[in-house]
Image (cartoon, rainbow, N blue to C red; front, side, top):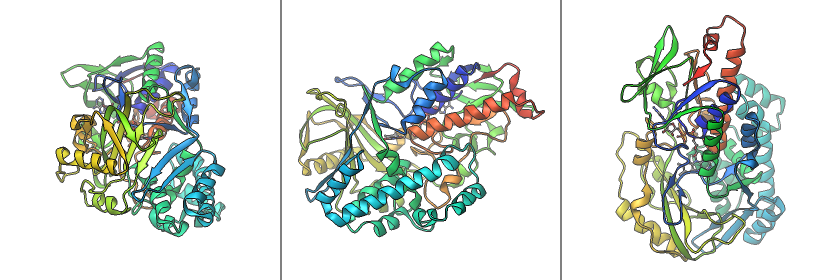
Length: 500
Ligand SMILES: Cc1cc2nc3c(=O)[nH]c(=O)nc-3n(C[C@H](O)[C@H](O)[C@H](O)COP(=O)(O)OP(=O)(O)OC[C@H]3O[C@@H](n4cnc5c(N)ncnc54)[C@H](O)[C@@H]3O)c2cc1C
């Protein structure tokens, strides 16, 4: 198992619980991948994802190991999903309870907008439910099967807006441009722009409306809990272990080479980093035919992430807070042109809020703004000018921090590119732009019969829950190949049953 992000951890847990002998190799000193933290005087501060959605995916993971999720982490369900602020002083809270959101939208933008919200919300739910099984839960979704599925439910086609971008669909759905802006932001959850992402991404709203959970203590508590379970299941965990080659012998992955010279023999391997690393040759010359599409498809967006501890003054913050700019598409024009946005929307996670108790005096915060991936074009790393601009923009909303956070703890796309090999700093694999983007990702099986993929760069996509779902696909592919009694070369793995 190469890579100990949530996908690698989840795959290792499923495989070890099924009785396989697993070695987990991670190039960093700690487990978790993008679920990482910065140290601070208020304790470790999350510097990656901040909440869980699609809880059933995590329940399923722990159940696969005979465990209950709630015995290992404390999850706090959020009634209030997010608070949204605009420069004109308007503010909108959205809730898990649709009726409460309806009332909030009515107070914010009037009765017609509230009706439009209900219609949008129901469309999002229908799309989510329609595509969950044939797309997200399917190990290898196929265009023909999806087309058949859609044709059997013709009412779906207008809801999907098959030829529309998310932005255009939202413009047809809402009269109030602030609601177009708000729901368009969900494209950034998978690293895209509403002006280029397909309208079907409306369904992301339902993933959030169906429940958001804060992990008590921070998201890293989840990966720590899985790490402990791996130890219980006898997984050999090796950190500071960068894999620089997967050796292929007789058409099968046979050895994993670590930087520094160590070699680990294996009966099969799972790569759970960015699959672009295979196509570029970063894992050896024998694998460059795998995930070829990652070389030509554009990359998803990156981010600038600022984690710090401070005492806030001013705006009433909840766990999830979004501060919008008055020019909704400005940041996406910049991002599409590979520029760091001048007028970004600013997401502030007040990590100690929404935890069911009063926040401490010194609170932990994570501020995220969208940024382009590093690509081949060098981007400005002007943190010294960018940081005060962001702080000033936040101050215009009446929010200040003391002490003033220092720019030293800002993570940039370049940092992400260094941390996650061959990702070019993209946080969500390849771009979600284009009508068929969802079908273009690499899937669990590769052309090498005992080499598998998992992770946010593979199907069904990025985000903690999707990456965890990809782990289920990878584990199921491996276990089904192992139990297959056919003469398929995939059964070559069955001998030693060990996975590196
Ligand atoms: C700032 C930020 C905010 C986010 N917000 C959200 C959110 O709110 N909700 C959400 O669902 N998602 C969010 N995401 C996305 C989410 O974090 C990722 O989609 C998910 O964590 C990816 O997990 P993964 O296991 O696929 O990959 P990663 O976490 O990237 O893990 C891959 C691991 O493989 C290791 N690796 C790679 N190559 C090698 C090698 N050659 N040898 C050894 N090890 C290797 C890497 O070091 C890494 O640890 C956010 C991400 C970031 C950065």
